[in-house]
Image 1 (cartoon, helix red, strand yellow):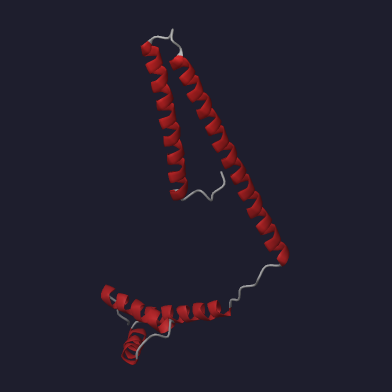
Image 2 (cartoon, rainbow, N blue to C red):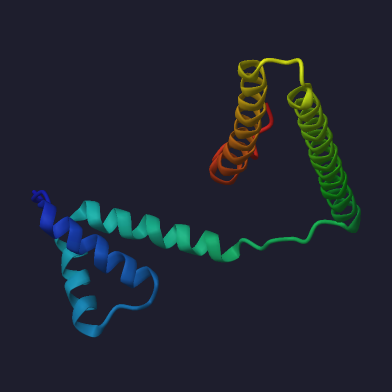
Length: 155
């Protein structure tokens, strides 16, 4: 009847197993490894399974896809990049035009001599607040895009 391997021996077996699979095991370690697999049948079974996995993985060869696949891949990248750049340019242009219009409208209202000072102050504060909010939203979107782990997932 075989005895059950304890936790520390199992950890040592796994360490030696990885070294054996990678052909990095020393002579003394190899003797220790052989003793373990002779003493514990479950370790021998795992060693045999790992050998089979290594054999199969060494037979696997990667094939290069045909040129048509690469052509369609690069066209897809170009199309996505083209659209992103287009949206970015449109957004930046719209923001600049909107900011220019708001500043000119605010300056025109502030320059109006008949308007009370508190209304001029309210317009000025509104323009400044809107500008801060726009900058904050843009900054947040840029920051979350850089760190978003789901940005590659299509919704």
